[in-house]
Length: 103
Image 1 (cartoon, rainbow, N blue to C red):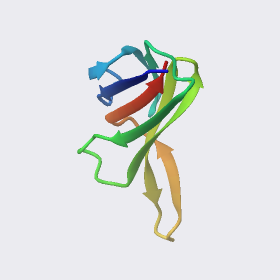
Image 2 (cartoon, rainbow, N blue to C red):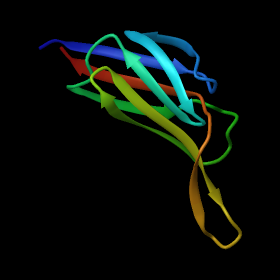
Image 3 (cartoon, rainbow, N blue to C red):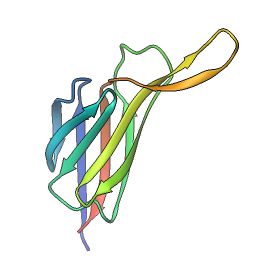
Image 4 (cartoon, rainbow, N blue to C red):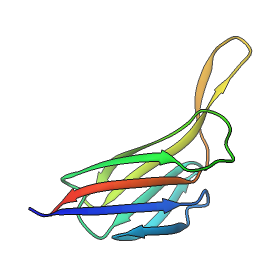
C-alpha cells in the first residue's frame, strides 16, 4: 500500500481555494460540506481545522468518512446564553482539511 496525501482549503461558500487530489466540494447545508477526493478514503485518517478569521468565537471542524471517496466536514460555533448554557450551531466557515490515505 502506498501513502497518498490529500488536502483541501475551502472558503465559507464551499469553493475550493487550493487542494490536492480533490474531485469536488459540495455544500450540503449551512456549515456542512462534502469533500470528494480522487482516491479512496476507506483507509484514511483526516483532520480539519477552522480557517475563518472572521469568526471570533469557538469554532471547530471535524471530518468523518461518508463513503469511499468522500469526507464530510461540519463547521460551526458554540453559542452561549446568559445562564452559562451553550449549544453547537452549524455555520458556514472556511476550513482546511488534511487527509492521509492508503491505496
